[in-house]
Image 1 (tube, helix red, strand yellow):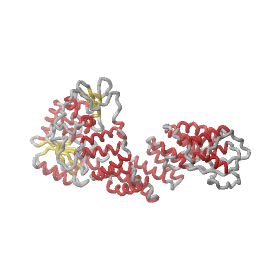
Image 2 (cartoon, one colour; image 1 turned 180 degrees about the horizontal axis):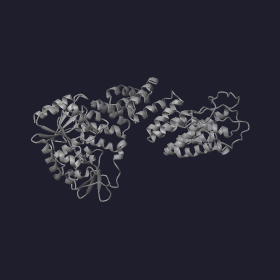
Image 3 (cartoon, helix red, strand yellow; image 1 turned 30 degrees about the vertical axis):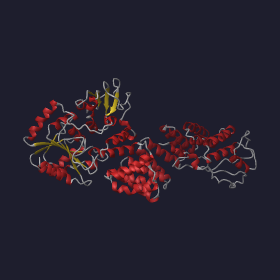
Image 4 (cartoon, one colour; image 1 turned 120 degrees about the horizontal axis):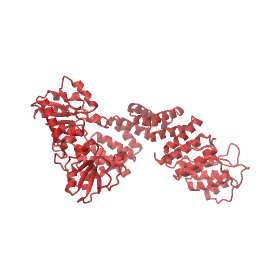
Length: 631
């Protein structure tokens, strides 16, 4: 979590604090100072437990050593009638500097006060807060610990210590202090909120949800507790419940950016892109210079196929935060969709940072930047999906033509198949170490080549000859003299847009009426259950039990006359094998399929069948029927 959250640190005083120069109800001659909460938090958008009293100097207080006072202090002292400073007065002067956002001067006064009264927990607490203002989180932790030792039963001090430990980067160590604060005072809202936010940061959304619910029981009208519940419900995929929470939040505070933005995100998470747009527009009115709003609005418009509008918001997001990955990657995909490859590849490099960075391990090998490769050894490293690797392994032959020996680092499942790719010397499954001059993520090769040309010769992958022969005999026996057509109707259900790209099998039933075709299911996974719905109406040969590897799938595809598929790894594998492949695409297809085309520069054997309206597959099925009858 960002350091700006230091604003959750609490002041610990217990009785109400009058404003500057207001006579004290006790009749003391000394005025008091109300600390400005923003002085202690400086960048935080989070609420604080505000200061409620200051120490008031008393006649019995010991005088402090000689001090040099600045003009603001002299003005303050003038109101006191020239009485000598003591520990409590020095403490108050420190708070004056906190109010004036001068933490270094505040620290001087707090430490002078502590020299006279070293066990004053409130002054120790304030010394820690001054350290937080300087982003000295370890120092703040030190001073809060001292304060806790002096007042071990003060729940606010435990809360503050927990927050400082968290800001120092030791979140798990902070939790016992929040728990102790709540044990001492079960109604301490700031500790409940801090505990919930820490659980969120630690990746425990279910536990965080319970903690936010506890916070709301303490303070039913607290927006942080309400909005935190919405965020955690989204995190555990309870989007309908999250939407109800965010709608309540927007009803309470229509101008609350976090509420409006949260509602937009929640609706978009349910793939209701049109419904989300008004709330993103409202969020943009509230925060016209918000990177997050422009980025998300760009993504929503991309999903709706409104690419020009989407690009406008993505470019605005990049101007606001040039080095943040999401908007750059999205705009890169937009450029690639338009065929602007050189610009697109450069921006698509941002896929290797941000949330996807974990898929790109750092190796003890130089990353290839486009240097000459004659006599060099390079290893191509894996990408996120099998389809990506099937599509981009074509560049191995380009690198070999430059004089390189090219290996590929692949998973156990892909290695046997990729080892036969044109230009590949060998496939390895262990992490590449010594023996290479360079490595390059396989999708980064075109960017390093700085070439707009796509090597579109197919096939560049080949099936195992022995396996292909076995499959040819097997499928030939089942098909007789009919055409052998493979079918895939569903992709990975975990894909965030799978609802748009997958087709219910029964929507394809008109294909069953076309004579002269033997259908073979290349489908894997849960979607196989849909075959039961078509039993007796569409005799599809099931192959899933035999498709136990990508090598087997490649051999099966090699033995078919045609593959009809949605946008999943099978379409890339079929295209790489040079097999005729007809791809059924949603209205807003992935960038590599471009827009408005029935062909594709990546796969010369591909034919594209596109939706015109999101969710309506009928025209696609009609076009497929006509095309199949024309074979």
